[in-house]
Length: 351
Image (tube, rainbow, N blue to C red; front, side, top):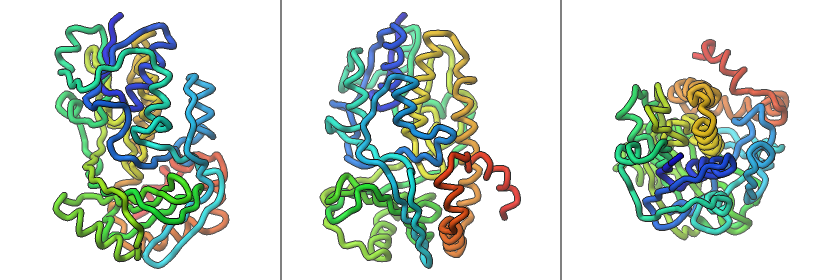
């Protein structure tokens, strides 16, 4: 059996890892010259989004034999709206490194893969689909899939980020909600360590020409004066596809539209969809049925996104205040209740 994977990001590498576990070798094509993201940044596994799974790091090790070492546990989240601040403590998840460094999530996965990676390669999936029995598209964007099946864009974003120097709590994530600079997005700080962190602004439904002024307003409004080592800009859109396997071509991770449209998280679904594609290739199991848990979650998060897009700053004040209330805080952050699933049933009552 001949299998090609386009993209050596975490989804493509997870697919290769699982194929090898099942006795199938593959050929990987990567357009960059090395494994890992160009811009170093801190991402996360957020337990609240991955329930009923309690611990994603343990889950991937126990279920799929993928051992991942996070940067730190996330034990505190501080949320700011224009008028309120709420702090929640607990076992919230993990910070993970995304970069070309040896300790990055990407390179940890790569060390467990024996299949050859062809760098500086950007092949045509159509040509590969004729040469290989199966092709897995793990390019990190949905451009190919949007042309092949029914597609509904859920949110468009421009992201600006920076690596900043200062004093940070290694276990703490901090978030800012303000429509003046983020629209219905948000800003956040996640630490590399005690002295370095990622500062990121995710702004929705903005044009690229607006991004720098929104970034400057973010810095001014929140009175940030950190030393910035480097900055980057990224356009990232999310959507929902009707199909995720077309003929002998599988789509995984962001290439399949599996990015969370609410907070922009994608690592968990990227890993799991890559694994599902490998198992479908090996066993013939229906891929669409396998990824239904992912598509259902993305659809629910898209419905939350629809509500959030209508928020004003006073709505964010109310949200942050409510999330800081002891009972709500406990249920949302310190239980294993799938609050996204059960909260979704109440969305229709929220105007």
